[in-house]
Amino acid sequence: MKRLVLFAALVFGAAALAGAMHSYLSHSGTDATVAFHSNGARKSSIVYVEGLKQGPSSQWYASGQLECEGGYVDGMRSGEWRFWNEQGELDLERSGTYADGRKVAPFLE
Image (cartoon, rainbow, N blue to C red):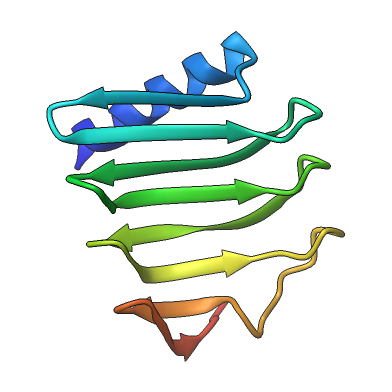
């Protein structure tokens, strides 16, 4: 898992420095993507393993405000997910613990 996170961090950092609108890197069945809004602000960072979302993922609004962050297991949301509105306020209805892609418990601070 450490290697996967390090791989993702390197790819995402390189793509941001390059100013790409979309960056894609593949290595040994692991693919990392970083997308950017038209204004250059980061839009998303996602890692895929054998075609399925796997590991940490984040998305941002065009303003640069974080929209959501959490993790995937076998292509489905899993574990703690947090969602924010464009003003940076935590969205408690969507935030919480996920299993098999579905929310199973509310967010607990």
